[in-house]
Every structure is written in C-alpha cells, then in structure tokens.
Image 1 (cartoon, one colour):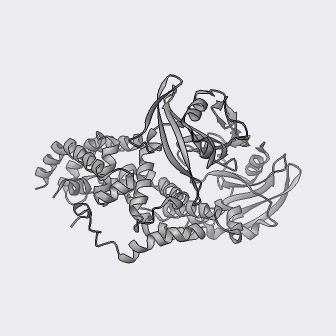
Image 2 (cartoon, rainbow over the protein chains, first blue to last red):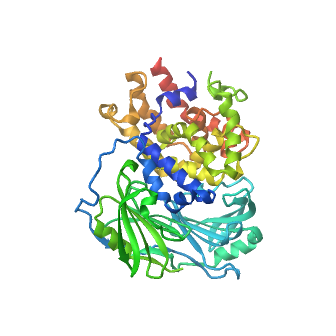
Image 3 (cartoon, rainbow over the protein chains, first blue to last red):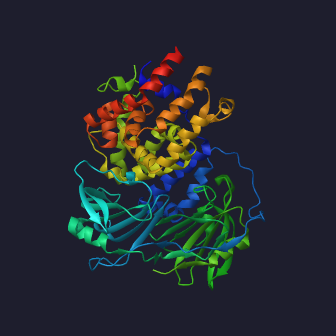
Length: 318
Length: 201
C-alpha cells in the first residue's frame, strides 16, 4: 500500500451528503443561475430564496407545520452593517460604492467590476487570493505588502487586467485593494491603499430589528441582506432582497394563505410558502418608507406579527 | 490502479461521455445558465466527499458556495480541459484554504478523539478494521502539521483522486511545484506513514 493509499484509507472519512444539504446547495446554484437567466425566468429571479428554500427540502417528508407557532423568538435591535474603511484618495468619477459581505470578507466596489477599484478586508487568510510566484513586494502604511497582476471576471465571458495589493493590517486581518481595467496600475492602486482610513461606511440596505442574537451573514451587491443565528447560515435564515416591482399576488410564486396588509402606508402581502416546498417559511413583499420594493423571507420560528415588525424596519438609503 | 500513479492515463471509472461533456455543459451555460446544473448533478457528491473529509459538516454549507463560485467563473474555464473535476477541485481547495483554521482544528480534534467515541461519529466510521481506527488519530495529527499548500497537493491526490497534472491544473501551479510539494508532504509524513504501514500489515 503506497503513501497516498494510506492517507486515503486512514484519513478522516467523508460524511454523508443528506438530501436537505444537497437540496440547499443546489438551491443556491439555482438562485445564482436564476439571477443570470433570461427574461422568461423572472419569477425565480424575483424570489430566488423561495426557490432556494423549496429545493432545500428535496427529499424530506413534509408534515404541515403551524407557521409562527413558536413563542421563544424575541426581536432586538440590529447593529448596522458597515464597511470599516474609507479611501480618501479615490480617482474621480467612480461613484458610490457597492458593498458585499460574505462569511470571510467584506468588500466595497467603486465603479465596474472590470473597470474600477475594489477593497476587500476582514479576510482571515491570504489564501483568498492565488499569489503567483512573480508577485512583487511593496509596503502599505508601514506593512509589508504583495502586488500581483491578474485577470478579473464579472460572471460573463468578459475579463479585464487587474492589479491587486495585499497586506496584513494591524487588526490581524488581510486587506486588498484591486484596480481593474483602466485602474490596473500598481502605483495608483498602492496610493489608494495608502489612503484608506478607519472610517466606517454604512451599507444601503438595513434592518432595524431582527431575532435577538442574529447577525448579518451575507450582504450582496447592496441588494440582498441575510441574517442568521450564529452558525446557522443557509438554514432558517432571514433574507431581504430588493425587487424591481411588487408581485400582483404572492400565490403566483408558490405562497399560500396570502394576506394583504399595509406596511409603511403602502399595500403589502404576506403569505406562507407552499407546503410541498418543505420547511415552511414566511414570505412578504412590501415597500420601504423610501418607496423601494423588497421581498422578505423569514423562518417559521417567527410569528406573523414579528415578520411584519421586521418588514417595517427595512430601510434602503442608496 | 490509482489515477495518481499514472499521470497521463484518465481513470477508467470516469465514463467518456462525462469527460467529454463537462466542457460542453460549461460552454452551453454561458448562453443558457440553467445548463450549469448538470455539472452539479455530476460532481456534487464527489466534491462533498472531499470537502467533508477536510472540513466535516461545514462541507454542507460550502458545497453550494463551491458551485455558485464555479458558475460565476464559468467563463474562465479553459476549453482544453474536457473534465471539469480538476477545475472544481481547485475551487474546492480555495474554499478549504479560507477555512484552514477549521481544518486544522478538525484534524487536531480527530487526533484527540478517544477510540471509545470513534464509532458513533459518522466522520470516523471504522474503515476496514480496528487497527485502522487505532492509527487514524495519529495520521490526523500529522496532517494538521503540514503546510496548507503541501496538504492541498497531498489530499487532492489521495482524496480527490486527481493525478499530478490535474492537481497542477486545479491549483494553477507548475507540475514541478506539485511534485516538490508532494515530496515535502511525504517526507514530513514519513515517520507516521512508516509506523502505520507496519501496523497495518
């Protein structure tokens, strides 16, 4: 038996991929595909998380559950999500930033993905980037840094050259500044990196209340905000997504027991996800006080009134 | 015959239609995004096995992220690669690197697990014999001590069943670097592997 066989045979064994886990993973892919899909897929694009939750339940034997029957969940104020840094020497014309948060980074993008500047921080491991052998040394704010040239993509066949400078900041996290397209210039990118200040920027989409102890686990393109209890991302999460317009009737998208109500002085709808979709969730569509339509998906552990209270606290300030 | 023993020979268990179709599926998904779902159907279980061996239950959450990442990067897929597995494993390895602390913690925890509680943990099911269960914690401890870059190469070969050329493609590194990292990992594991070899006889 050779070394690799030994490592294979005696290493940790794989865990089984359960049907719900496989369904949840497939649902995330479905949601991503729906975002990129042509016009005829619009219903899925508008409510991708409904589809996600539906697929997450594939293979489960579903017993109807009384939605909102749990009394133990309490709402509490939510700490606003902010991007911790502000560049003070950004080239003109790039406009306002778009923010993104994932499990292992927080990012701000100025301009387009293929022609702009992005800042990624709160990264615990520089393995987030592939650092080639020809990387160049640099110094940012007194810290040793690495400059790499690479190609960036935006999810289409298009790509652009980019320069990224990466360094380890005082707070033990890694930070990177990337200039792409016409901003892919090492000196320019390093100057932007040097100009970063610890000045927090609030994101556009926010909640004022959420289940106590829950925190933001994902924030995408200033359009989708997801909160979850610690360690429970992707399961029973609470998601707010901006939509272009409100549905005529939520039942068209698999919701049932749809009820019309008023939120922020505007017509809104709340319903429950179709039983065959598995674990029942709340779905709600309304407008923020600034008039922005949004959809909200919330777990069954919340009551109807709690879901409405959360929806009333959704704000969007671009 | 193991795939990594013969770098230029595709493993026989990979059906030709699968090998030839992956690239076509990815190319089609540029126009019709839904087509990418076929890639999930083909490879999700295998990639989950790899992720779960390295990260345990965290694999459940990362599987979706892996395919969403792959979907977002599908335009970067190199047309000359008919089989998407190395590409997907490369993305998987990147995801694992982001959670290297969790991986190291997992191995250290496995190294400390008393034999009495090995059996109930599905991730530690006995593989072939009581002997195997007895030596596994020592291997876990040795894996925890490897550099991430070396560990990536070793485990893509041993658990991902890729060959060396595929590992090079997966990690975007030269073949020579794969060999040097594998050599370093083997050298570091040598004392443990020699012991295990003896005990397994």
